[in-house]
Picture 1 (cartoon, rainbow, N blue to C red):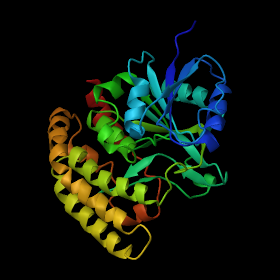
Picture 2 (cartoon, helix red, strand yellow):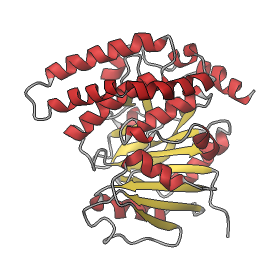
Picture 3 (cartoon, helix red, strand yellow):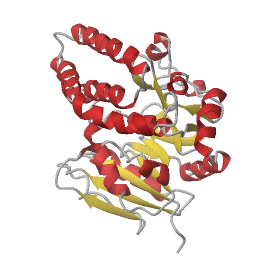
Length: 341
């Protein structure tokens, strides 16, 4: 039997409405040499009782409690021997040639350790769900192109800051070298954090135009739920404290906290108005633990602060409009060559 090229992890929590469709889409892949692990975070719906696996390439890992997206992916990839690791959300449905397109992308970009897929809104196939994760000097990440027409997507492969883990591919040795997903993030921004750490270690990310996935987006947790707001506000602080090099962190962190407080004031009187403030406070209270992680990361990084600065969006309007931020030759020449040499 041919060694699988990739292991695909699908982390599920009460996703019965979409999980079977995602699994079936994987079962129809034109490239067959993969293995898939569905990790169920102690779902309380009929996600697993109603699930039918296409064949022996698929397995299920049942957890007794909800460990979150980050920890569940790490469990799925533990002791893995495939050269590539892929993440796929249970509400993301790949085209039949998705894996073939990922493999073609790896062949075109042999020095790249992480790849993103072109995500299209599953409920409106004329609208983009995203073309990679972008990051700003204000400390706010976003999915590039989200909400824009599919016709606005870049015409070919591009370099972006990081892949969205709803449908991403990572080289296993690079993933393991940086420690995988940070399980303290639980969920939300754990993919930006992983991509940032890979960036700091000299890797880059290519967004593959022809690797198509249809994504519902925030189907399991709700885009503006109290849970999502808490996780996002907390994890953004940790992302800055852990990953942003000095002296950029001196600029970013105070400005970010100020913008968060402004947003919190604007949310007063809404249904979930306490969640962002609680998340921000939790983020600040968690800074001491993140400082230890920062020391380890920054001591080992290979990318300079100027390299990282060149990858950030410096105009607020780019963030507001959720533009696709295409990184150029400076990023790849400045970081990847150092990683290779």
